[in-house]
Length: 236
Image 1 (cartoon, helix red, strand yellow):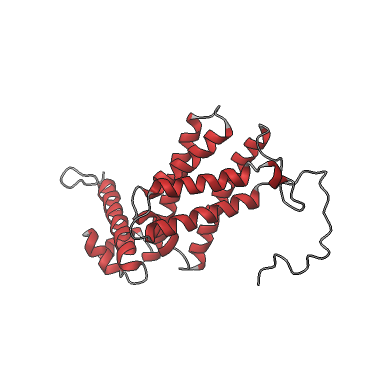
Image 2 (image 1 turned 45 degrees about the vertical axis):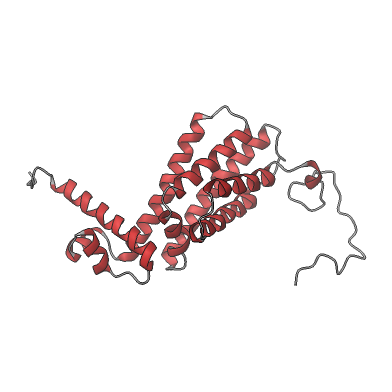
C-alpha cells in the first residue's frame, strides 16, 4: 500500500504537483514568453524540484502542448454541453450559442488566447501538428452545424468544409487581436463580430448565392462572360 504524507495519498500529491507546474507554465509562458522561460523558473514558481518536473513532463514544450490541448478540450466540452441544451433550437440560435460559449470559455482568462494563439505558434512540427488536429476538430464541428442549417432549408445545400476552416482562422485572428489590444476590446464585440461572420458565411443571402462561381451558387446559374474585364478587380 502506498504511504500517505499528511493524510494525502501519493497519487494526489503527484496530481497536485502536476497542476502547479501547469499553472506556473501558463503564467510564465504568457508573461515572460515561452521561448524566454526556463524549466528552472517553472519549477521555482510551482515549488517543485526539477527531478519531479521530469517525472511529469519531457520538457517545457510538453507543458505547452498540454496547456494548448487542455484549453481547446475545455472549450469543446463547454460548447458541446451548451448545444445539447438547445438541441431542438433553430439554426441561428445554435450558431449563436456555439460562438458565445466558445468566446466566453477562451476569454475567461486573457492568458488562454495568448497561450493558444501566440505562444504556441511556430514552436515545433509536433505542436503545429496538434494545432492542425484542433483546426480539423473545430472545422468539423462548425461544418456540422452549417449542414444542420442546410437540412432545415435556411442555408445553401453545399460542402461547408472550406468555409468552416476560414471561420476557425477568423476566430483565431480576432482572439489574437483581443488579447493584444490596449485598451482591451469588449469581449462582447469580439463575439458579435464572429457571430456575424459565421451567419453571413453560412446563411448566405439570395444575391450572394447567385454570384457565378460562388460555392453557394444555385445549380442553374451559369458562368457569365468575363471578356472586357481583364484588368478589373485583380489584386497585386
